[in-house]
Image (cartoon, rainbow, N blue to C red; front, side):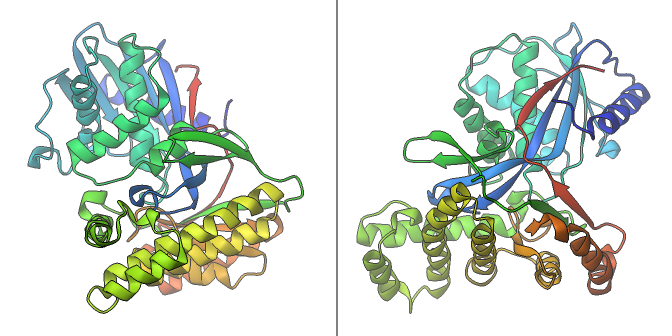
Length: 411
């Protein structure tokens, strides 16, 4: 269960906890993963099936009950926010200006949503955490929310909660308290991630299944291509606009043709009817549907390829999704596409595209293991020339496929 990066995380957390007077020795520690979506990015709020893996960029949280009804928290990645100290239940109002620019909105939001859902929170704790998940594209906020929910539960003796309810509440923290209109993709891919397996989610049944990679797969790696940019919350990004457009079109076209979400447009016949009816009057909205429709068709091909171990086809579909996200969904960003343009030229790269909410953050790539060094060299040579403002901030991370939530020995 131990990961090579755990040692550095412990060091960071321990050092910062001492600095602000948090006594965490003898407590507990939890690690939550990032995620790498293989399909369908931006499909969750449009009703598509989902497939991805948990990856080993993490958030680590060390905590210990403090015998009071207060939470005292320190984020080693956002030290300028200082020590957050508040009484359980006394949280700022949802979506208020007070929470807009502090990481503590996730802490307060967890408290608020759990109490709203009927959980009795009376026991406080001291907590410090550290993360190495890039700032956009790999679900840093979802990882933090899931870790915080589990911490409140553990300290307050709450057990036996349905994992899918944890997903729902993690989404509610962002939707209802923070105002970020995320779907459930990130939370699902972290909460249910299983080492060495892909996670498949069917929204119609709300069922999870695990899909092993076919045995004949070539030796490959997943890469996170961190652009060095830091995307603001989804509530401040293009993501919010795209979700609004999709919701608008689902209502507009759905009322006419009898469907509820864009994922319901699955047949060529219905797709053509919608495009013929709205192509001239709403071309941008039709572009959003075009991506979802084509991505759904590719999804099943990708799943079959994964099961067969045909990682080359998985890579081609990953690349095609990226082109659709860039050209039809229009959710990518210049630095994300620079990364894709660079690695696309390297032999052994099977596919590449932006990851996550869009605008900023990280792109991803599927790469033959033998090509990893060449990809890193190409990025190190090309990216600083194209994006000099981020010349000292970018990174390339080779990712392992890991369990989403892991309990670790305390400090």
